Length: 316
Image (cartoon, rainbow, N blue to C red; front, side):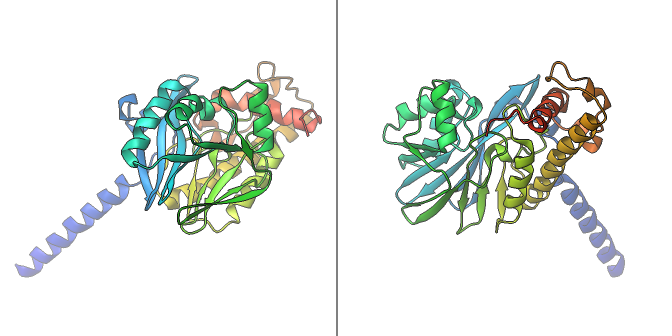
């Protein structure tokens, strides 16, 4: 009788362990609906390491809602934000969230991606925190100036800059171009957190409207070679650190496949003049990435961008 009780208890424990392990498996998607979430669940944030937060709010593209991510670092002498959000409405929610997370003032805003979904809320941030210093790469400053963004960075980082805010060290790095012409990453050496912005799209098909496709592949490999515990994506869910690291490799493989398929199709005489005039797309073999979030809308655009690169039409 005692033995049977022990065996029964062991079976229950095993079943519970199996259920928990299964529940921990995140669905391989960036679509909030496929994760069982809705718009009312956002914005939200999670503490990756003490005083380091990944912040998620929503962006909708091609009818799919997924997250745009920011990094919030709280120090003993103010907060640092890496990447903002899409528009003033999201900006107000971000300011409210910042004030819930910390009473500290916002000292720096690092523009890691100059696309509007990461800088469109900067006017609201500047109004709420007029003393905040905005930093970008020189290339992103030029892009934002040309587009007449309402808040322009006043400081730039071409290669590397170390910020010491209170007792926290942050490294602003240019490890190479990828998603834009001015991508930056932010690395916290004490906790080995690397915020990659739009260089890492978690379960989102490689979006290449302003990309440098082959350079993006090389940049992702540089990131993989760094001493990193947390790889934080600019879009897509922030899952556990092991998942984020493994899926960075999937993001790399998806980007490599786009480049190799474009080369194969071009060599075979297939044409792709633009995303709207890309007969080559019908012949593209995207394998497991054909069902990636936003693949239907982004794949023709990505192929067209690689064709531009192969034809030497991308800016230097």
